[in-house]
Length: 228
Image 1 (cartoon, helix red, strand yellow):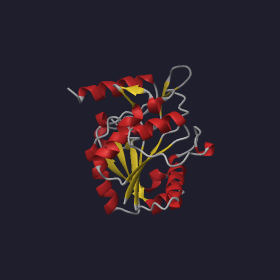
Image 2 (spheres, helix red, strand yellow):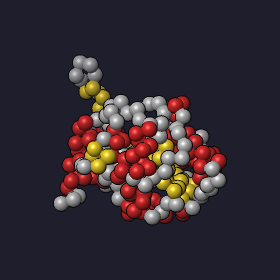
Image 3 (tube, rainbow, N blue to C red):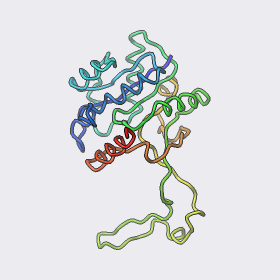
């Protein structure tokens, strides 16, 4: 049995009420709920939230909210792992057991059902690690700069700055969409998820980390191009 947990707290600061703000005609979280339903992978789609409005909207759109997320797991600094572990324990206390858990973030309108299914297959083949979507950096990080207060640029790695792009190692970053893993892995995993994962590479146009208004507008433009 699989369960999808969507962690959606109400206190987003950089984009207020981000999880239920209108995105191309629908509240943002409804895209994640609809994706989980269309995948037909989950016996339960659960929203973990501390917010009554999010709870009501989630249930109206077909997710369940069987418990309230405690305030100690709802601030800006709370990592993902303890939130999902809490959800697993709450469901088990209600007599609902499951083998695999997908943490699906609430602001992922660009993700596809095919990617969720692909990650599910990878997770089944690799039960001892998490599976997460990753995107390749467009430019080698070894050639990155910092900018001083004076405006002068400073290479992070002087010895690499003159290297050819093709000589640099390919590097990736977390796409910030979802994590697949066994229930046992979530419950016992107190370490960094990134230190115990395998990556599913996706293209840059499949994800936008929506942290500010520019990100939001970019995500809407990308979403609309897929409807043409």
